[in-house]
Length: 254
Image (cartoon, rainbow, N blue to C red):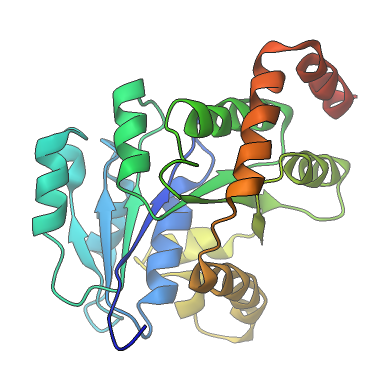
């Protein structure tokens, strides 16, 4: 765009704990930091992303860190967010807590270009993800703010029935299904040393690296499709309040 560098603000969020938000945030930061300037903000009081960064070897790709959980997600924190990003930052990645009130949710949407929602293949995770996406669209007004929303299938085994049901659910929402990350011990190995799976030695990491490249390609396009979000918003209202929502969960659990 005529030489203008635009910072992309990426929020990794889900209302359910244990969906892998910190794993997604840290590995995405590691992947992008290979050739981009990346800042990682940790809004989760558990501080998992900050702990990961403390373990990180100084010889690895540099990732700027901010322990944002020390401030609430309000106007003051937003101002600090803007001031504490280094010059020429390409990507800001925010790891968020599971529990957020309506004010925090609205603030999150207003300060995002992209929201990534990791979902694990279980009926409970699917149920919570549906409500969360609905809140983003209805309460957070993601469509009005032109925020791109992408769903990630996390910790999946592609040959299972539950994974197929998760894919069916994601396709039904008219929300982009942007990546699927397999269930592997590589993520635990990487986390122990403050690394991303792309930084592990040996050939075994290449399969995981390919899956991350799919997400990065989608982020490069940062698609905003208002007509899809409008349709999804209508669907979410029906899923939350109407009989067809109950029928959907019955089918997914069967």
